[in-house]
Image 1 (cartoon, helix red, strand yellow):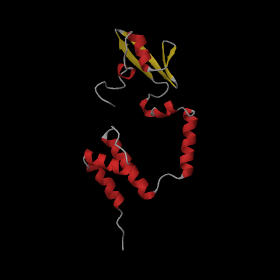
Image 2: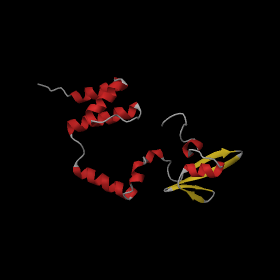
Image 3: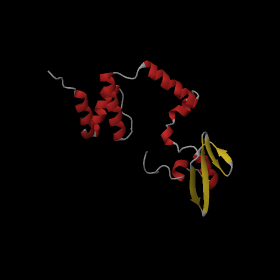
Image 4: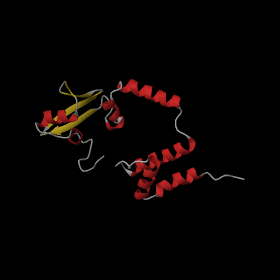
Length: 150
């Protein structure tokens, strides 16, 4: 007698589920409102949660190891921890932007940015130094579309 494993079928069904259905599943699986992220994010987190509940989560030793690695990376600074690493360009990246006929180059540092040999904590502060007005630095340097939320 073979047993039917419903997990692969549930995971496959996520691809064709309508967004309201995904949000409903999120509420059931996480007992919270779904975040305002894109569909792909909802699918992947729901898929992980389905498997986690069925097969078990990470071993305590793995969780402890991940937490220790996180501490090494951010020194326990919760502000750093909240910023996703993939939201930020890689250290050493050079961002180039032309403004009023002048080309400006900004270098990404581990703890901020550098423009004209001076350190800045944010891209917005660099953009303000260049333009003299308030700008969202991510938009100014073309890293984020001002019309979208991502």
